[in-house]
Image 1 (cartoon, rainbow, N blue to C red):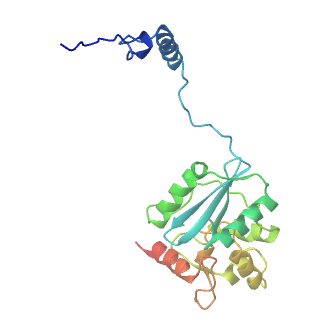
Image 2 (cartoon, rainbow, N blue to C red):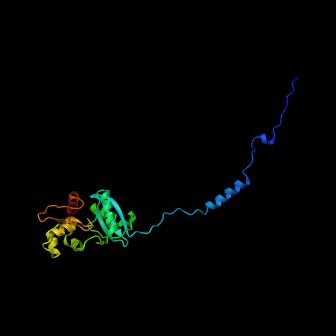
Image 3 (cartoon, rainbow, N blue to C red):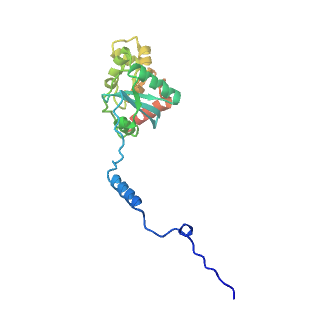
Length: 219
């Protein structure tokens, strides 16, 4: 008969023992649980408004840049057809108002809503406070008279505006001042036409001027 030898494995040769979690892992889990209870909620930072806040909007009459100062007054409502035009306006704001210019759409929410309502025919006037800080002294005179000189749905001429500000021979200067209006649409330079009734140049292009005049002439 053959003999069978039974060998015994040493403890080091045996497989892992089936034991519960170690005391260390239990302690680590308990500490992690306690720390998670004190985790602060994630909140969006509340950043202060800049000296100049702006936003660029795609509107029914083209791409426009809206900007306001720290007091909330609208200082720009300008057509920016491309990035170069946008950069030129931002540089102008930084140069003439403050170098602290920040893109902040929420700061322009009221202006955006009013402009959208106006271009959609749901509003006939703006309630926004404005500041002509970007206008020259002569522009301030011309633009300051514009709203009172020509009502919604009406038109006037450069010559009539010149007479209204007691500069009857300055119709060309009036045209230049309106052509560089920093608050397009809000201050309605689009309502001013040539003495012949022809539509002349407009910062947003003649198509935008035609759109606005047609909108305002609708019942």
